Each structure stands twice: as structure tokens, then as C-alpha cells.
Image (tube, rainbow, N blue to C red; front, side, top):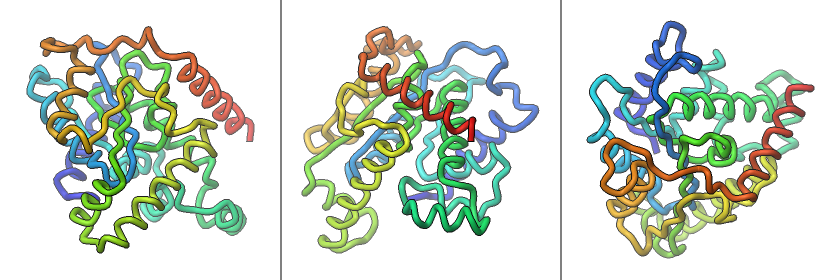
Length: 267
């Protein structure tokens, strides 16, 4: 769910960082900043945790640095702005909303870019945002796309289905059966998305630095634990979790993603 304030922050970040003339575009010199990817089960409170994390990290961000910004659904705005795509394309960008048959038909009739093209453009934008830093990227295979970047901490949020149903019902105003169907549908779509485009298993714990159960820790506690992974316990200046310990599985998934991009570029 989007809110106007979140969208305004997202657009402000895009205008400042990605658009021509921005002083912090990739390639310009700046100290390496941290970034976070969050993979999540539906209804586990990822957006709430991400907003709390951004507020916590912002408290120790030096003046003049880009503000910590959460990219969830608003990542669509970044992709559209970064690749000069028309706004009507936005409805096709959420994770795994279109079937392969729809994709083929719509591409034949020129209704939208092929899904592989959109995935490549989304991935390029995610990489740019991760390089710029001070970004919290929710979903869309961000952990696999940025697996080789040493400044990114990867987090997986899970929770018992009953707790997720309760949260989804409250946040989206759904009945319990509708909330259950929503959680199961979203989980399946995200699992397909990562498997189809990145040949990765979203439930593989080796893809993440940190896996947290928001059924056992509060959203505030989850934000604190992630902040410590980013900055290091008691180290507000940063440093965070070393990527030197990235698992072989993460490296293999990053390599598979690179092969996918290479195939896309040849099309």
C-alpha cells in the first residue's frame, strides 16, 4: 500500500539522485553508503519494518547525505523515471502479475514492453539505487540482483500464516478468508517471480544475511536488529555486516542473474 508521503520521498530521491545533473549519480565520487534489500512473506509487516528502519538509520546519517528512502511499490516510479517509460506501464511492474500467455499477446500487439525487458530495466534501477546507497529495497529479487555488491545487507522477513492473515486483514481492510487468500497468492507470485527470472529459491536462507520472524519479534525490534546489521552494534558511523562471508549459494545465484542479463542483452 502506498501513501502520499512515501511517494513524495521516493520521487524526491529519484529527482535528486537519478535524474541528469544529480550530484550523486552512479559514477560520481562519494563514500560508499549502505543499502538494504528486504525479501518478505506477504503480511509480515515488511513495509512497517522498512519505514521504522529508515527512521532509525536516518538518526545517524550525517547532514547533507541523501535521506534513507524505502522503495516498495514506489520502486515503479523509479523504474519509470529512470527508463523514460510511460506511466501506464506501471500496472505491469508489480511482481509476477502477468502470465506468460498475456505477456506474449501484449508484446505482439505492442501494448507494453516484454516482461523480460521490464525485469532488466527494473534490475538496472535496483543496482543504481543500491550503488547510490541509503536505500531500502523491498522485493523484486533485490537480494539476488545486488548479491555481489559489498555495501548491501540482505534481509528475509517471515511470520506464521495466522499472524500474517491478521496483519493483512487490518492493513488492507480484508476479511479473514480474503486476507488468507491474499497472503497465499502473493507468496506464490513472489516465489514464481524469483524462480522464473533469477533461477533462485526465495525461501533459501543462504541468500540472506539475516532472517527474522516478525511473529516472534516486534516490528521495532526487527528494525533495530537490521540497523545493527547495517551499522554494527553500537557503531552509528556504519561499517555493518561484511559481505566477505557471502555464501557460495548467494554467489551462484548472482552468477545466474548475470547470465540472465547477458541473455537479455542478446535479444
